[in-house]
Every structure is written in C-alpha cells, then in structure tokens.
Length: 342
Image (cartoon, rainbow, N blue to C red; front, side):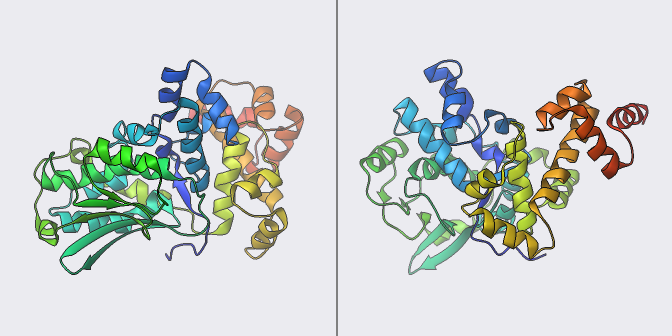
C-alpha cells in the first residue's frame, strides 16, 4: 500500500521512552504530570506503546522536559537510555548482514515507527550521508528531539563499525544554538548546524562492513514480530490519523474536535472536510474508538461498567450500554462474560 500523503507527521508512543521517569527522578514526584499537561498530553499516553501520536507533540514534550530540568542535554541523555527500545523496526534493521543492508532496511521500515519522515542514504563526492528528515510543519525548537534520536542511530552504526566508532561529523537542521556545542562535546563528534536534515557523515567504505557485534534485542526477532509490525502498520488514511489522536484524548475522558484538530495542526473545519472526503465523520470515529477502548477495558480489567463509561466520557453507563449494544450486538456485561468463557 502507498504511504499516506500528508504533511502531518505521526510517531510511535515508544519515542517517549524514559522521559516521565527521568523527569520525576530529577524534579520529584508528579513533575512529569506537569510537563505532559503543559504540552496538552495526558501522562498515561506513555503507557500506550503500540499507538501513535503527532510528532510535533513529542517534539514539544522533549523541549518542555528540558526546560523544566534546566538540562540542555536532556534529549541526548534520554536517548542514551533507550537505544534498544524503538521496537521491531530497529531490531529488524540491525539483523541485516551489512551496514548498507541495515540502512536500507531502516529506510523502508521507519514508516512502522513514523509517518511524514524519511531516512535516506546519499553520497556526495567521497562522503556519504545518512539523513533523517521531517516533512511538513515543524516547531522551530526541536533540538531536544534531534538529540534523542542520535544515540539509537549511533548504536545502529556501531553494530557494524564497533563501539568506539563515531561519524566524521553530524549535521543538524536547526540554526546555531550554544547547546549544539555541548552536544558535540558530549558525543565527541563535530556538529554542523543549519543543514537540510539531521545527518551522519561517514566514509562510503563502511557500507559493506559486516556485523561486528550481535545486538541482544535484535537476536530475539522472530517471524511473528515482523508479522505483527506489518499487520498493525502505520496510519494509511487521514481518518486513521484522527483515530490515533482521538485515542490519546480519550485517556482523559474527552475527545473534543478542537483539541484533536489542534494536535494535528489543523482547524476543525479542515479536519471535518478531510474526513468527509473519506466518507467519515468525527462523531463516527469517536464512537468507534470509544467502543474499541471499552472492549479492551472489559476484557483486560475488572473495572465496573459505570467506571468505564465515566472514563470514556459518557455521562452515565446507560449511554455506553446503548452505544455498545448497537455496535457490538451485546451489552457490555454480556460481552465481558462471553470473553471470559472464550
């Protein structure tokens, strides 16, 4: 299937990584709640590893975390704690026989982690660049996000080049910032700013290097992991982007169209118009997501139906029961009993 043509970049919730724990560890209990609230995200979204959220929300989250902690290298330190935690697409890439094959896999598989971005290999003269590019609208302040992507990319190269390897230089698609010098000092790599994309520069002779060390998590990759990754897939339609964003807001019991549209960088009317073009409506999607979450809560928790209704933004359990019965053909209590039996 073709990739979704959209300027709205989405990313896996996995990208949040250890951010909540790092903030609380440094600033005290509930500090992470404050940072998430500041950027309009429920802190519980960090537990939804298999879901996606707008990339700009993740970028804003890392910037807010760095501001609260006063640490100009917050993104880099968070990235160093999650070099092996980006999921199947990275593990699969690192099982390739050579660096060239690894980077080719990563360039194709990134869509299972992010949409609206690109990994690409290019050669200019005697220098090769492997670049990470974000399309569409991007916040001007995104240095923390770029920092947090560097350690995992560096580790990917080191699977083939050895643990001591560093790129000849790193390019960043941001204007000069004194913090860039601190990043360069910590990584022991020259950094150039104001480039077209974030890139690693290296000798093309490295491309045919075989694996130097076996990545522990990559060695556990199985066919069913890849099948799940492909089956779940990235959002392919605008409606699916909206669904993912509705999931985020329903974590706090509400999914107002204004909020969802804002997360996607759109106006409510534009959102509604684009949904109509796909024969969908916002109200329809909210109902579908509510029922989907209700099913999961009924099967995986002992939460009373009344509590589930409140959590999903229904005024009372009667409204949930009516909507659930219309969609599923069974009331919630009966669905739960049958699920237990099965």
